[in-house]
Length: 274
Image (cartoon, rainbow, N blue to C red):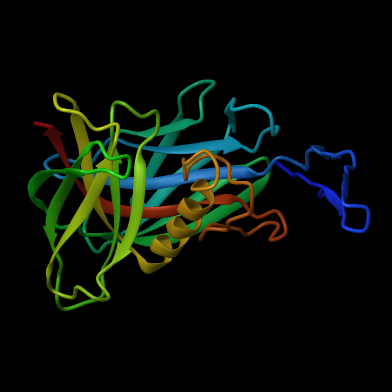
């Protein structure tokens, strides 16, 4: 687990000079924690039968290498007790299922047996509205240069509270960008995802998506996005703080995992920037 303890710079106001202490960085690792990325996304227009759950372990601070959690037994079970097995691709973090059956409103239970301990969670598969259209506008950017701004629209369901995860993949950036939003002030209205970046230029294709999510996953992603905003920008990188999801260790509650179990449709549009 990544831990940093910093000792601040001391300023001597009496002598009007600065006195600097050595910065001691303690990077000793705690026991690795299991990281579970169990996000089932049913791409609209597909059967949704091909799904992947990722299991890894927290790693040293100075490396981005992924440590696969090898040898786990991973299953997802629906309310009719149909079991879907997720089998590890050897020496990777990926556990794959090729016969999953996604049903909107269905409740699923995740169970993972790893290193003698059992991890569980349950959730419902959420619907997602269609992306209706995309608009593009060129405005003066903060730097004074032209900036291309993109909006993509979707219709909110006005009879209930809704939460959404928006994602934009820009080929000029290494990692996608996310936003978690609610319909608190837009109940039943046409909503949109907004994207503006100096690295958006004519001729590139943006991957735009919207995903209906639960309130719990909305709050969880907001925390990760907030943390990532001051670091790598990637909410799925190992965070510098412990963010607990909805997965519990039923064998040893003190050894809780990191990660989340969520299921939903997802709608994606590839937009060619003009």
